Image 1 (tube, rainbow, N blue to C red):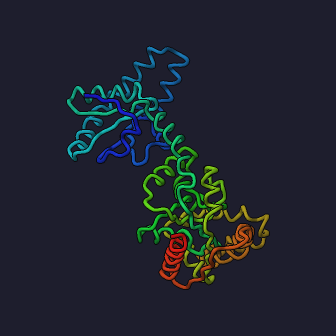
Image 2: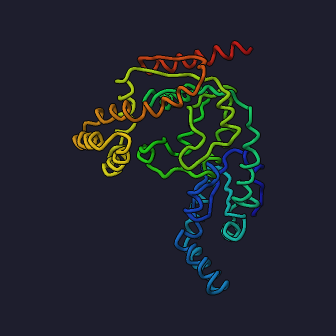
Image 3: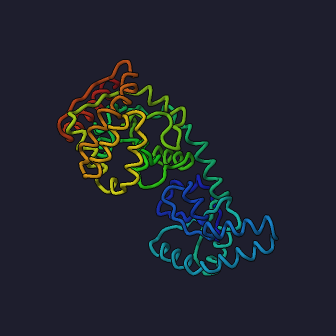
Length: 350
């Protein structure tokens, strides 16, 4: 039996598997978090059908769609049956909850597999995101981490989350770490606005406490822009300036980038060359030479001192007064000090 259901009525149900039957391009732009993609039409097929529909005939386009989809029916049957065996509920969706999801659901229903369809499809889900994000204005108190590149802000967020503390990793949601090296750190293209907002709402819905650690960011992060309310809430949070010695910072960046991030020599060299105007031709040439000799720590240190630190000076000095400043030597020491700061501000309020 096929049953249509509103997205809002699915979010508190357990053991759900969402199947996005749209094309990979649509799926990659944005989807329900953790949805799996089993496309009725791949990107090329969808493009051909669209052209046929608009320039040749609707009937021929429909026949093409039927031909392409029919080849994938066994895959749908096998995958859905496998999911149902795990006592999970299968919910399909396409863009509007129309032809693509309905046609697949009807075939599965004939095969006696129980199927749900999101009424209104992805468009219904997207409206849910837009309408519910604003509900999180003034919902949390943010503990905002500032400091130079390599001071360990992102690493601190990971360690805090591992210890059960609430965090918001905006760089990860945007898939962009900023600067000319941002496309090297993240292997995937930067997320667009829709996907960023989907991940943000999903995170908000799963946060269990009021005090949330977050890294200081500009309003634009890669291809995404922070909602106004979130940017303002972060600006009005508790501001913490982190610092450590330069060797620590170099080691942190080396660990981040050398774990397969610096294996694309061409990307790195092109990024370094973009700094010619700021650093000068001779300095850039020296950085290229040292990088090609695998002298990565030299390159990292020079970039920090001569490129990143001067850039960060403005944003660091923009805060008139920090609530606290933390210097640390070891990673665990930083996490302990941040947790202590959080407990202190919670104690002051209560």
